[in-house]
Image 1 (tube, rainbow, N blue to C red):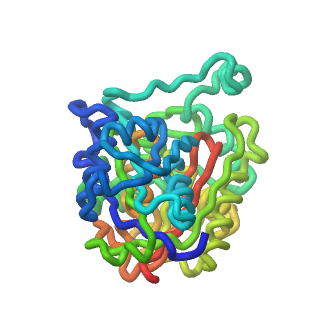
Image 2: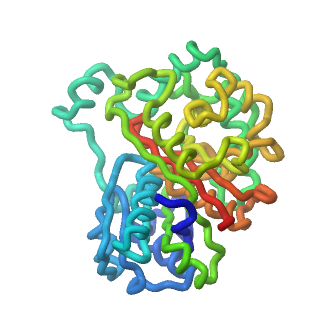
Length: 379
């Protein structure tokens, strides 16, 4: 993909975030989609490309009255939407479509119209992990993180600091779920969920959604919104079983998607003004900082503990409050993308002054997949 040939022109989340028991999951998709269309002055008949995950593209297209010429139903977990952005940009460049709508919504808390998720007994996870008590993210993620801590010398206090900093950013965001300041001691004294994770190191469970609209950079000039250009993209997958990662102290999918996006963007790490790293659990920003090449893994914990990612720090990270404090409906990648777009538009609640390049990095499953999108507001 060539740099700056495709832009985000529409971006919006659902009207409400948090607990939304009066709307089904499909309605949340529609709400986010219509908000994104209103953001850039489009209507359903203007859309000719649709991408979504969990819900099918045909369901979204039918519900909104769209007749697309291009669809993408890639569903690899919470970073699916990063992959959708990459695929949509390639499709627009190839002339397969002109205007792509990417939607996400989940009734993660209220469970209204939510697609059921299960681990069949005959699946890989069902055969080789579930019988040993490894079931669900809180019991899956501790497996690699304990090795990560031992290998790289990361402390409990440093991982707790991730949650503390996320809450500092959330306090600046009126739409954040959790805004009350917390300390490292608060985190380490909170309820144990699955060692080493305590509840304040685990993601929220909420309802909500978001949508993006992409078109060519040439067409983007005609829209009322400030274009946010796609500078670089990357994607990869590793394994559906966390126990089968190539190595527990690093993610092969991260190490593929992130550097690919940086090479495509033609930028160095020092050029990055703003960073979003999917933080369903508090260890993920550490993996991201290391695997994306910002610093050796041994330095990630001390870097965050020193305050470099907090408000006023040299590398603003997860400025919406992240999945730990902003919101997390189950597949958080869309909300990270939304914050990157807001930062590049200059309208974020906790705006990073003068930010020109934003890196948005996501995870799917328990390190099963990864997607990286690099945005810029400069042509």
